Length: 113
Image (cartoon, rainbow, N blue to C red; front, side, top):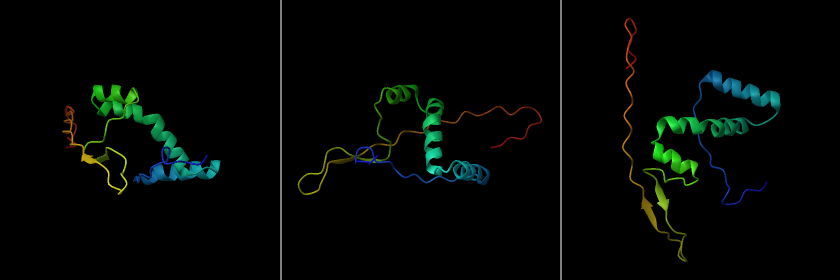
């Protein structure tokens, strides 16, 4: 399938634990498929669960409804470029980070923080 501007995939760099990278290479080698195919499947199948844990419920509902909100802190093109190649651009304000929940340290256990 030939990709157009609308359905073009983005490249994302990721660092993996050596054992996970080895398993991915093994999977790709044995099946004859590219590692990127498996990474894409893993991300597509697991992102929903990660969103539910880390994003506000309203944002998860918005995403599930097919309305992807802009990424805070990124610059967004609001309109198509005009005759001179200029477009209306605005920055999306960053959202405050959600505080991490502190885990209670059990007796005899060493704290990790």
